[in-house]
Amino acid sequence: TDVFLVLLIIFMITTSAMVKPAADVDLPKAADNDEEAHGVMVTMTPSHEIFVAERPVSPDDAALASALKDALAHSTEKVVILAGDRGVVLGEVVRVLGIAKEAGATGFALAAE
Image 1 (cartoon, rainbow, N blue to C red):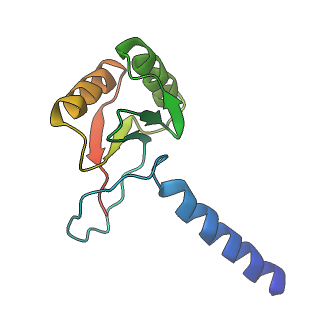
Image 2 (cartoon, rainbow, N blue to C red; image 1 turned 120 degrees about the vertical axis):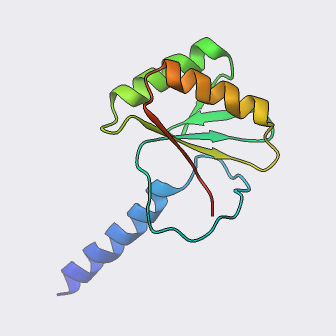
């Protein structure tokens, strides 16, 4: 029983750690929704840093497209989950989503708290 409880606690901690964005960003608030998207997490910071699946990526288009193609190839769902800080400009978001679509993403989701 003790081993089972320890394994359960470890599973709960690792599961919650996998859902968090790579960088510390101030996500916008949203209404409660039980549906949770699964896919490739792309995190954008106000200092123009971009992380694809917790890996820092150069903000230029070619490096970002290459990282997204690689991440989408290893993902079962071709969905890009965008976690952007409140300070990120909408034009940057549109550019990243366009590159993700060219890289093969079939769906998009926005991360919120």
